[in-house]
Length: 257
Image (cartoon, rainbow, N blue to C red):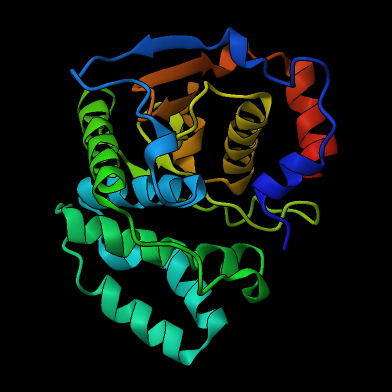
């Protein structure tokens, strides 16, 4: 299985990237909390924090728990029957629209199963630290609140965790996006820095794969964006600003159309 993110890592991009992140419009928000939230005081891996924020933001926006945690459940299936049973019981404890400390701890634990689906069960680490301490929990709750505030302004969300049936190729066989609003594909990142050229290529691939899937909502997309709740900042570029030759090259050489 070759995911979008794995394919991005394989590709040698031109200098500055196919879509230079410096060309994105930046909007910063102020909620009275520190920005960035200090990742150095958090006690679990940054990738788990990022996945937990993503999943809990979907939950906070009203998505059903079984839909939100689809990938961790698939990963748990790959790990084994007992893991899947435990994960299923955990997911059934969530309530759409409700995020609290229990939800944060549970989401972090479930996020550990992601790798068992996206890469393979041999990469699952049952001994990994997945229980957030109070500081980490508070940071995740703050980032989820920032996300819900962001979507009150830029939403509503019309799809989350979306896939691209009909848009995959021999080069890219899997991949799912974070959030889709009426005119923008949004990817969530919780890094301490702004978007990179890998992030912008990932977004461009999502848009092109969406168009090739034939799903009508992607024909209405006018922007590609990154929201970073750790920095409490949004980055956006209009698809009309991306050169046609870049689009054609990514379609042909990166995705394989």
